[in-house]
Image 1 (cartoon, rainbow, N blue to C red):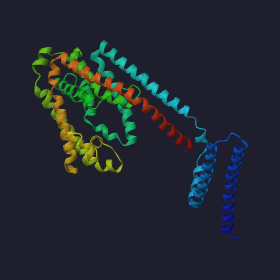
Image 2 (cartoon, rainbow, N blue to C red):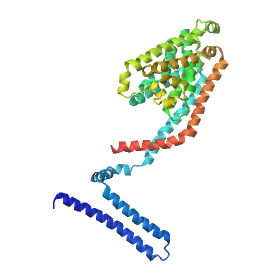
Image 3 (cartoon, one colour):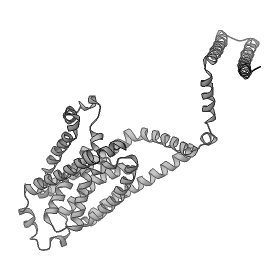
Image 4 (cartoon, rainbow, N blue to C red):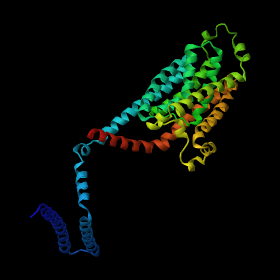
Length: 387
C-alpha cells in the first residue's frame, strides 16, 4: 500500500471515529429520552435537530480541503500558554495606575496655576516655560514615533517660542511685548475654542494641547496687567504704554509675523520635506484638517473652498483660510490691551469652555472609550508577551 493510500485510509479512519463518537452521543440521548416516561414532543424535536446538525457537520467536513484542515491545525498550534494564562487584570491595574498618576498631576497642575497666578502673576512665565520644556519634549518624542512630528511646525508652537524669546531675552523691548501679546492673546487663546481643547486630567496629550494655548494666554494676561516692575525702568508708566499703542502694533506687525511663519511652513511641509513626509507616512495639520472624502468636505464652507481647488493649490488655499482666521483673531487684541475687564472676561470664557469640553469628554465619551482602550492595550501586551 503506497503512502497516499495509507493517508487516505488514515483520514477515513479519523472520520469514522468522529462519526462513531457523534453517533454514540445520539444513541445515548435517544436511550435517555425513552427511559424517561415523561418525554415530550419538544424532547423529540431536540433529538431530531441534533441528528440534523450531525449530518450537516459530516457534510461540511467532507467539503473542507486538506489545506483548510492544515490551516486549522496551525491556528490551534499558535495558541501558546502565555495567551491562555495571561491575566488581564494585571494590564488593567498597570494602565489605571498610570492614568491615576497623570490625573493626580493634572489636578495638582491646575491648583498650582491658581496659586501661582494669585501669589505672583508676574513670574508665572517661569512655570509656563518649565511645562513647555517638559511637555513639548515628550510630545516630540511620542509624535516622532508615529510620524506626527510635522504637526509641531504649526503656528501655536512658534507663538510659544516667540513669547519665551521675549520674556527671557528681550523683556524690555516694548515692540516684542506687544507682538507676543497679540499672538498669545489672539490666535493662541481663541484656539482653545476653535480646536475644542479639553481639560482632561488623565490624558497627557490633551493636557499638552490645552497648555500650549492656555498658558501663553495666561502669561499674556499676567504680563500685561501685573508686569515685573524691573522691565519698565525708564518708562513713564502707563502713559507710554497707552499712548504708543496702535493698530499697527497689534495687527500689522503680528500679520507680518504670521506671513513669515506661513512662508517657512509652506517651504518646509510642501516643498523641502514633501517627499520625505509622503515616503515615511508622515502627517501634517493639512492632512488632518482637509478630508479626502468630498462628502465630508461639503459640510464646511472653508473645506468646500479648499477641496474645490486643484490638488496642487489646495495647501495654498488652506493657508489662506488659516491666515484669514488668524488675522481676525488679532483684531480684538488692541482692545484687550486697553481693557482689563474685557480681556479678563474673554480669557475666563475660553478657559471655561475647556472645562466644559473636559466634562463632556468624561461623561459622554470617556466611559466607553476607557473600556475599549483597556481591551486594546491588553491585546497589545499579549502580543508583546508572546513575542
